[in-house]
Image (cartoon, rainbow, N blue to C red; front, side, top):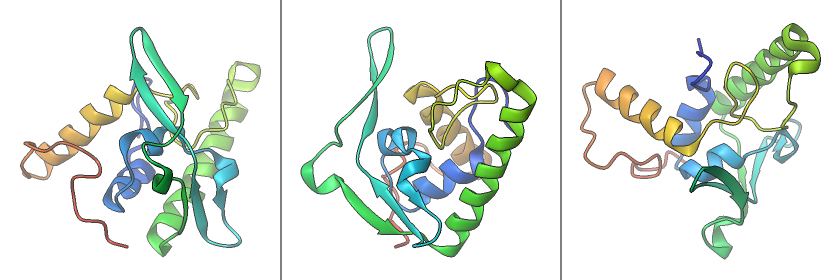
Length: 142
């Protein structure tokens, strides 16, 4: 379960396992997740900047892409969407409605470093090396 400072680990963990970059995970909007076609469109990246973070273009032209959604990621995404709707009902008008897939328990987009720290913690918990602690530093399962 998420805390106020951490996004839900299931969806962002699977996105990392499938080779998405940190910024791509954080910029992914629900409008880019097509549950009917089972695809995810990557068209932006969220970057750490002085004093916070901002959304901009993907790292390279070829980074902008549409990918098939594997079954486990589709299940996790649907569960995350349901969780968002439940949080939105609980928070009412306080829900920021960013439209992003990865948000904290209050619906706010986390700072990119928050995802890096969560990823590092997951590697430590799994007794895996953290020397190359990047979400796209592992082989993609595509």
